[in-house]
Length: 117
Image (tube, rainbow, N blue to C red):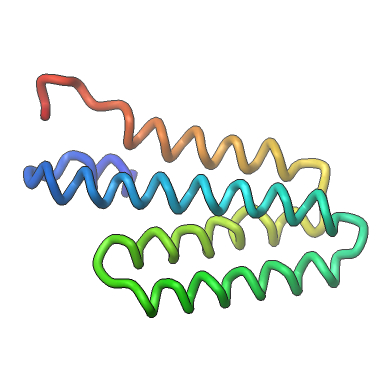
């Protein structure tokens, strides 16, 4: 619902920029989560450590950048946490959870009527 609210704002330029970084951050977070799950699914301690390191790197990137680019870094970090932490108990469901998150978010961003622009 937050994605739909962001997209329906009247300032089109800012909405498009924020939507781009929201989608880009989520895509990066999904890809990193799938890669970490593939590499460390048999060792939950290393998987959790790698997620923590990734979130730290995303926090550092968000602190260095400003405006909506910072928002993309934050989304990349917490998307990994949202998908990866529950995957500790069920690593075989990481891909499905990641694709569901990406589909829900991209549907909210990309589903705009051309006449609304």
